[in-house]
Structures are given as C-alpha cells and as structure tokens.
Amino acid sequence: MPDFNVPVQWKIIAKHHHDGGWDDHRDHDDDHDWSDHHDQNDGHWEHNVDDRDKWDSNRELNFNSENEGKRDSGRNTGRGFHLVQSGVAFARPEHAHSVHIEVEDLEPNTEYYYQFRFGRYRSPLGRTKTAPTADSEIDELEFAFVSCQNYPYGYYTAHEHLAEEELDVAFHLGDYIYEGDSKGSLDRGHEPSREIRSLSDYRIRYAQYKSDSNLQEAHAAFPWIVTWDDHEVANNYADEIDEGTPPEEFLERRAAAYQAYWEHQPIRRSRMPDGPDMPLYRRFTFGQLAEFDVLDTRQYRDDQTASSEAANDPERTILGDEQEQWLLDGFDDTASTWNILANQVPVAATDENADPTEIDFGGGDKWDGYRADRQTLLDAMAQNDDLNPVVITGDVHHNYVYNLKADFSDSDSETVGTEYVGTSISSFGDASGLTQYGPSAGEPWQRLSNADRGYVRCTLTPEQLQTDYRVVSTVEEPTATIDTLASFVTEAGTPGAQLVTERPEEEPIEIVDIRPNQEGDLNNEYVTLQNEGDSEIDMSNFVLSFEGGRSQNYTFGDFSLDASETVTIRNGDGEDTQTTLYTGFDGAVLNNSNPDTVVIANDKGVVLDDDSYQAH
Image (cartoon, rainbow, N blue to C red):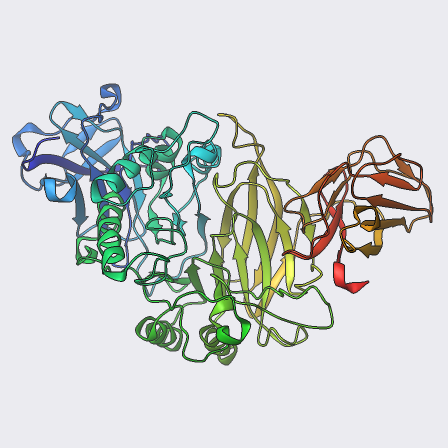
C-alpha cells in the first residue's frame, strides 16, 4: 500500500419512487458499512482501501465526472436510482487507508445505497437505512444480532443466510476477530500464523476476516452497529489486565487493537481511539419504539475472580462508574416503548453448585463475577413498569433464553426483564446440537438451551418482541441450510419469554440415579435411566451427555427400553445386556467438573431430562 493519502470517491444514491413503493432491486458491496445512526438524518460508512480491492465493474454506477471531488445532489444515475450526494475523502496511511464517511441531511427512515471508487476500481452497491426521528411512531423494527466468528473454526454459512434477511439493522456483539494462532482443519488458518500483538498484525487479521464473501454480503445488506468483547484484543482481558503481561506492555497492545478495530468497523470519527482508550458505549433511538444501549463490558471492568465471596464485593464493577450512571440515566430519561441492552456476556446467573439445595453463582467472566453491578441493573429494571427491558447477549457460543429475576438467589422472585443469548457464527465449530426447552437443573429461569451455530432474528412492535433462533446445519462445510429452531415472544408490560413455536415431542425417559467415580473404580460410575411411559421406547441414537450437554456424549446403538424398565450406563468397558450398557470411555466421566449435570436427549437432540450428580 502507498504511504501517502489516497483519494476515495463516494456517492449516496436512492431509488426512484414508483407507484407508492421502492424499486425492489438490490446489489451488494464488498465491505462497506454504516452505523452510529443516532442522528436520524445522517449516515456513516466505513471503507478500507486495500491493494486486493478489485471489485466487479459490471455492477458499477457511473460517477458524474463534472462533479467529482465535490458534494453533489439530485443527479440521475440511471437504473432506477438518483444521486443524492457525492464527494471525495482521503484514505490516510496512518488509518490503514480507511475512510469513515459521515453524511448529513438524509431523510429519516429511508433506504439509501452507497458506493466507493478508488482509481479504476468501483465497489458494488451497499444498502443502508436511516433511523426514524425520535418522536416518530413506527409499527415495526426488524433486526438481528450475531457474535463470535472464529475464522479457522468454520465457514460463515450463518452470514450467508443473514444477508438474505430483510432487516433494518444488525448488531455485532463482539469477538469479530480472534487474536490467536489457530490453524483449524478447514484451510482457513489465521494470518499471520501467530498470536497477534502489533498494529500491523491486527490489521492483517481484520483484512483476512473481511475477505470472506459471506461476511461481505452481510455487511452490504443492511447497517451494522458493533461493539467488542475480549478477542478483539486478548482472551478474557479486563481493563489494563492481561494475565502474565505487565500493564504498560498490555496497554500498548490494547492501543494497537483498538486502532485496528476503529479502522475496520463502521464507527464515527469522533470515536477514534486515543491510545488505549476508545469511547464505545453509546445509545441509538428508533422512533418511540426502541432505544438501544450498546455496552462496553471490557474496557472498564475489574479483573475476573473465581471466588464467589470476592464476586460479592460491592466495589467490583463490570461497567465502570461512568458507564453505569450513563445507563441508569438513560433508563430514567427514556421515552421509548422498549429499552434494549446490546451486551457482551450473560447477565443471568449460573448456579455453579450442583447440589440443588445450595446456590453458588461463582465468579468468572460473566456478570456472575460482578454481583453489585448486576443487582443495580436488575433493581433499575424493576423500578419502572414501562421500561420493557431486554438484554441481547453473545460470547458463550450457545443459544439461551432467560427470565431475569429480581433476586437470582430466589427463583420465585419477580421476573424483571428478559435476556436472549445468541450462539456463535462459527466459534467452536459444529457442536452437539442438543436443545433443552425450559428450565435446567441449576437454572430454573432458563427457557432455552441450544448449542447449534447461527444468529437471532428479531421483530419488534409496540406490543411485543419476537425472537427467532436461526440455526445452520453446519459450519464445517462451505454450504449449509438454515432453520428456525424456536421462536419466543416477550409481551410489552410482561417481562419474560414465552415459547410460541410448537414444542417437540419428548419421550418419558428420566434419570433416576447417578453415581460419580468412587475412589478410582470406574465400574462403580454410572447413570440409570427409566422409561416412565406405558409403552416401549426405541432409544437408538439417543444421547447421554455426562457434562451438561457440552461434552462426554455417549450415543446409544440399536436399543429399546420397555415400559417402566431401567437401564444403567456404566463407564469403561464390559458386556452390554438389556439392563446394562458400557460407554467404552476409558477415563473418569462423572468427575464433578462444571457443569455438574447429566443430560439425556432423544435422537432429535431434544433434552428429555437433566440431573445433578449431587442430587443422589
């Protein structure tokens, strides 16, 4: 790339109006984004000039040569479009030759298209839509949220399908890139092939991720609002703390990572980082319907702790004092029907103690480790009956739906909000696909648990929020189908989630006994299941997971269980009978690790029962 400023021409166009509707033609661009549309009559696009930019000239629109280099408006470009504005921005080497275009005087709640030209290369069209005015009444908002797209672990099949959705806006909740040296098994190994630390390294990694055509299509299809989690810098970092690294050294790395993040994301120039500091939390209003508070739970948090006692320290924070007050003030001042937090790590509590008579939320990277901030948030949700608070979350590579309780130590306490957690785009590759509808042994506030890959599509109206959990068939092949696993609704004025799609069939198989490893004798380690129904059940391809559905999965062969009969599944090797089966695993399975539960699922992956080791 050149070490001097490069002129990049840009243009914004709109479709001609025909018979009361928009022309339905849509092209896509490569990697041009729009975001931060808090002001309803302007827009923001980001573009990086790269010597690999060689866009398809067959899809170009002609610039008006008489007006290149200055702003223009109202000129016809043909093909059903008219030119709204155009101009030139300089791509500067100190910003990785990125340009961040901020355009004023656009119509609110209006669809626009945009295009760049660099030298003889022209981009295809990108599509965006401005936000409605804050006082306007809108009937519906369509959005989706995604997170966690580890490039070596899988193809971006979810982004391919996301790009086909008709959305007003998409949210990326973090882990846009991963900093490690993973090579994977799909010929998508990280570049450079080491853990990245320098500004040059981070820039190369973003260029690699944004070379993916499915991600490009998703960026081109609608505006994006982004926030980060940890892997944009380093795994599980907390403010200036990265375990084993002196703070002054880590802050240099954080400054490089923040600089590359700003360069490659649709973020305003006013949010350009100052060294290791970057103001990222912000608020977006969509008419009177919704206000989105985009959080930053990385830059200001205290270090993680594994201690439940330390996690209860009232001085610990995940938001920092300033961001927390900004959020609370927003709750007080909001005039929106819905108030949605775009958040990185799960708010809902996770009981780390498998004994059902005892509760221990532990610590860790989630809001569990920052109890005071969580309780402050829950208390604020409870104080305003008109707030309609919803949290959308990423990070954990798993789909969850949670009812947020006023007091998680009392599962019968009031539900004050709803949390929808989305799985990864590709991180961890294909998973077990096991799905649990309703509460789990340690989380009675849970309404869904699923380990597939995909994204969450949302339809918001003044009356309700509907979330559709969209899952792909695989990320380990370059093509995949997509289906809606389940849909939930949260009604305005009624916090909590209701399943609105049909619940799958669940055979009456229950866990009746569990015996963990006893003094190293694997033959004394077992789980006993019982058919509680009145007819025989074919259990072929049923799955017994010894670690909460995440690992140590035993799949049944050709096997049936009579009504009221039991079968014991033992660890290790032995001779299978009608009442005893052996896993073949040669190590401890029921080893009291986290999660400390056993799960039985049918051949469709639907969880039939789960139980704690310590409950027996």
